[in-house]
Length: 488
Image (cartoon, rainbow, N blue to C red):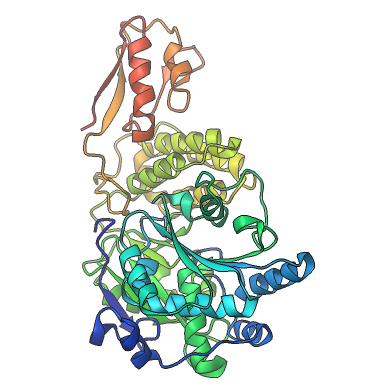
């Protein structure tokens, strides 16, 4: 599945967000109104009560209560005597996620309905919708805006399709004309966001869920789901699934039903929640339920609604190592835990996977970045890496022998450009090396000096984001001992 191919959509039980898809494909305004019915504006107090009654939480991954965000913006506007801005985060920077793109391409008016509700309640100055520059969702969204009248001026802003571009602070920075990276210091957009105004920022699916709830009310909304988590959930199921899809199901649905629907074969484990999520074993998947509480109970995470199962014919540790390298390369590079800590974590994972170092090295590297970043990227990357080491502990023992698990890395994690079309690794001619150490100074993120002052590096392929540095290291070696060769 490429980054520009929207997957099919499936549903278990009653469709809500995906209602009308089977009949209309993409819902234009007349079809949208026929399927979902009319909707009117709501006063601030009424919208707050609705969001609290359905316990609406952000669907972008963090799960922050929407009512708390809304109340914070209302209070900030009153305190500062300022207007507000409503921001829809539809950038969906994580390559493994497709649910927001499905909404943009097939149900754009639901997203716009939710944003309009929030804008009216806040008496907002404008609505800004952030979409990725992959050109997947923008055409449909532009067409939808031309079909209707929004309560306030509404603009679409394009952001780079990068992992960190979907972080809330990065999106606000991009809208403000700054680099599309998280701010160096943590700040609340509810106090000062777009244009310095109090800003309500939430994910595209969150606004769509709000629009559904506003039409049917909290009691009917809670007819699906669990007592703790009413309503439905959108999941992106890819990986080894024979029928990858975006699936809508009620919260509390057994994960097994979703896996069967997508024809997922048996495998060693499943990533839940995305690249900042956690792995679960095949046994845990059998008893897991699709909800924040249900997945947490088996060691997983709902996150952004991402489910990536691995097939039995792929090396799970190799797949995980690819993702950690990708996440390290997606760093904003503006704080130590990202700039230095994540490359070190990626190197530690590579060493553990190659059998060249114990898993304790990964735990130490993860501990060095946890809780210290300017945003959640270091924490999420550390969580992913540690979870892989734990769930695939049996494979790790096989790798510790130096022979590996006997399975190849197939690149099933949905990474851009994975697997590497031309993987390369460093080799050292020990008969030539005199331990000058220049190579370690050129690319310290990959080459270290051992206790005797000689270069040490993992036998795994050099990450693409360190390839240039590796080439420089080869060129500066005075003894011509270092070479970059194709990794077989």
